Length: 358
Ligand SMILES: Cc1c2[nH]c(c1CCC(=O)O)Cc1[nH]c(c(CCC(=O)O)c1C)Cc1[nH]c(c(CCC(=O)O)c1C)Cc1[nH]c(c(C)c1CCC(=O)O)C2
Image (cartoon, rainbow, N blue to C red; front, side, top):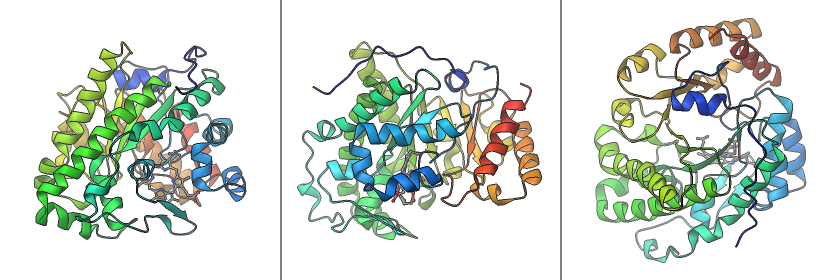
């Protein structure tokens, strides 16, 4: 039994939850993908004394890092400090976080080693994430809600087969054509884990969860239909049904399929309240696609816009807010903030968003 205390402080800022459910918050909500970590000097300092996974696996450390952006900025949500690659690790693959490179899996998954994945007790091994969420939600004192998250099946499959990041994900894409049976087998294993992992996070206090399909951009509509949509749908449906079985309240679910412009319409029918879009998607275009759907949009400022002169940055944010409109909208970047993003730029964006008249 993990340490759970679900007697949480009451929530003072529910803008994100309201926007996700289609209610109108007093101000537009904003959070920033990858806000907890690499661009913050206090994180880099903390990181000098601890390895990446040491921080993830120690609830006190993970809480400390999760709170860093909340102390510094007037954000409307926190996101637990962790990584999408904790799932491959719990399935038995070694994952290293190498400075200047990123995640490396020294022994990538092959068709031959697929059956070696340890599929029993996976979520038990991930209880440390639940404990970190639980402690963070207490330490947040109700200031803002906390996001849980997971990588999507295809995105995790990509890292597992490539052994890390890749420019093309061609080894993983090759599986989809040459080994469809094994691909589905792997995607099913991942989907089962993701469902229980998200339920675990919600049980421990996550008030909203996001599924990152960061590698959607390497597929096309046919591949996404075969190898992603059914699994993403199963995740939203089974997370909700497991929560009902456990008599737990449902939480809003966000899907962010980066580069998934080719199947936006299909994403609206997967059972997620919020769909994230990257900066290549025109706000008016996506609003039009979703006009008859009960979907909240999230996004989509180019993370590189943060390097523009502050005045220009503020005008771009203002334009983005006008184009998305104030209903069913959560402000965010179109992908994670970069390590060298200027702190002043983040303050400027939040300032424009919170001054915006809904
Ligand atoms: C693809 C992906 C990964 N991890 C993640 C994704 C999906 C989002 C996206 O597409 O950006 C998600 C992630 N990774 C991290 C978080 C923490 C919470 C947050 O601030 O959003 C989240 C939500 C911490 C991290 N994950 C990582 C760091 C930096 C590593 C370090 O401190 O050494 C942090 C703070 C490492 C990581 N982890 C990953 C990569 C490619 C890298 C290297 C690049 C980098 O982020 O610096 C895999």
